[in-house]
Length: 344
Image 1 (spheres, one colour):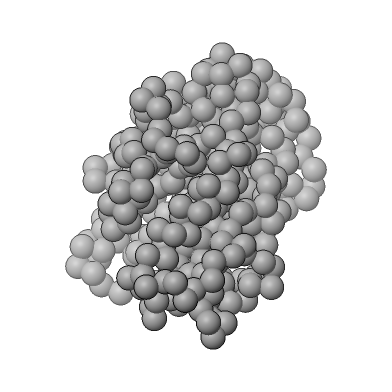
Image 2 (cartoon, rainbow, N blue to C red; image 1 turned 135 degrees about the horizontal axis):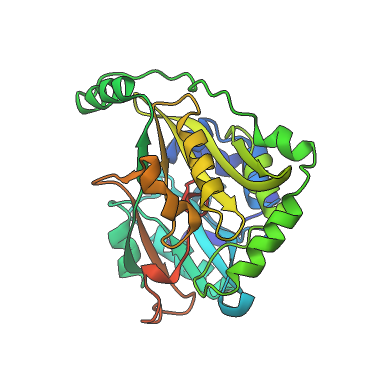
């Protein structure tokens, strides 16, 4: 029974206890350590707004559970903003499992955001997906991942080690690309013009897409503590023609460059190809990305050796805060970049 628990809004004073609970339940997260700086960046400095959250508190003051929704925004048809949330950072203390805390926190938080969000989306794993489906989420399908092998011998060795479950290196992969943090600090010339031209052209695309503003990109890639995002750029005629963001990371025994974002001027497949080639040459064993169908990067990817990897991808699930997702929403409704779906 959970009648002895108190459910209330997450408060800033709860942060240390929340981080302790998340670490105990979910380990160190994408950076290896759940720091207050990372938590604040993610949930309080997000340009789409502060993350709503709820906690369950035991009579002795311990946190029995926590649930946070990351605010997001998509651009819909004709540029209409579509407010969304993404369930993240959820944990139940082992002493309180099996008491319906996860469901209670989720249902209450859905009700809380029902007045200011239209969509709820996330990428649950195989273990958590059945629970989401029982609570009204609809599985929309697999978002595919494309891989470009850069160092065949190292890649084959790493893949073999992964299959054999041999211990892997823990140190970060070497990467020669400049950091996104430094690039944004230097106030890159030409970015605003590139984004404005891209945004105007994208008005013709009715798929839901995250609006790529300079503010969003700086937050997502330039300010993320501990994620080590790098930047790739290309020019035409002395002007910025394209920019991409990604990060070197360990994927078991393999060194992967996770290419999160590719932005080029409308129709410029040549610049997209140059950025894809540069990502593969970052110094890692392979590059991995998701390239939305119809984009310049997707059109250039095959000739640059990016192939959809079997048995990979992320399951997209969604609903509205008040009920099931309308039937017209399918996987094809969205135009994702990997940066929209990465767990961070």
